[in-house]
Length: 638
Image 1 (cartoon, rainbow, N blue to C red):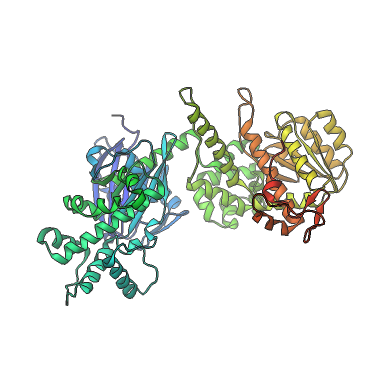
Image 2: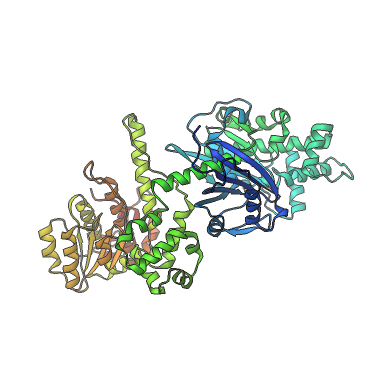
């Protein structure tokens, strides 16, 4: 089995123990250790204590990459544990530990990502059913709380769902569970009782108390979850056995709900600290019967297998998978979308802007949290230089830049690009083409800038005349834009011939707006149009790529970054993206001209649009009714 260039550090951090391991090759974990959190002042001290106790067989080795799974939500750079006092900055910790890469994820996300790597010996199937591959997989884990997640197949990889599904409302199925709910209402002093309140360690204790009250067991001894489990399995205690019975039944219902919600035909997996310790009792418990008790959907859920995760190091495997995916992504396309954009733009930045770029590339998470004064000081530049750097990337300012940077650093991608190959069926090919288009649309959506859209919309509203300019394959975008704005009664034209474009630009005047549409933003003919229009006093709105000459010269630039190889195929996806930007502008103009038109969205199929002369109708422009549904305003010309 191949070995890594250097061992990778993995950690699983809970409120009581911090578990560590080194991964020397895929799935090869060594030098595992479990340290008590209370014995160390902070997370850094615990890591240093673990590293200090390592024995290196090949001499002193440097750890370059690490992945930390922590029982806590992970958002942004700052991690604050909810069940312990440790807190730290991810980027600062990476630097203090001398790491090239430090990935910190929620422990349940790590467990979810471990599922595709588990072997048959790592799980135990409970009941029947056969998993379909590849299909959505569901995951539940009962411990201190109730974790809920899922995996969605995406190309050759998986996307983990970060959910708070444990907090959905508990729904009783019989009189006994109704009594438990009423007991919970009384003792929790809350109207909302979630499944997590019952399917967890504290939930076991609550069920035990509720059943003692229901059964009239006076003076029932207060017991913690481990003691309840031990007395049930070892001593056959009646009340404790009933507690486990209810617990397993509720877990079966929660698992079935997850299965039908996600369509988890790939199976439902049960993890956490409680169920794996129940051993064979869980197989005999009401869990599977309740899982299949789904009324009209009994056959559907009965075909879905359920598994208990028995692997000792499942979280390490998941953290390893996430780290491997991150390293592969960085190698293929270093950094997030905005970081990759900065790398590509380095040669076009001024020396001062280049210092800001180097700072962002070296410490992206620190820049995410620092104020502009601190960023300027760290880069050795003025604060206006920081703003100029942000605007050179197509951002309105530092806040907009940070939003894009934060989006890139989270790594959450709901739809991914999938390579089409010759073995695909027509159905698979169609699904991939549509998926790739959806991926491109979502990427553009993440880069939308409200201020630039607002400014472009205001310019178009105030324009005496609007002229749309495009060349080649993008000519249809200009023609579609002309069609939409003529429907508003707004004077406009579309020019796709270079000679006519220069003639049209030469008669523009102050108060007019030229909308220039170009994928690359480098065509000399369109740049001449911009120069001529601005000489005549007209404003220029560009729909183009960031860091392009067109984006720099325009008064407002709406950024669409998507590269297609026009030598092998027509730029289909790029044109769709540009058409959608035109749609955004059209809807914005329609709403600003007549805010009441938004109510037209409620017009049902078959209902007439408002017509001139009809009561309550008012014309906003010749040939355009006030009640024209916005959905129809965004339909492309045919």
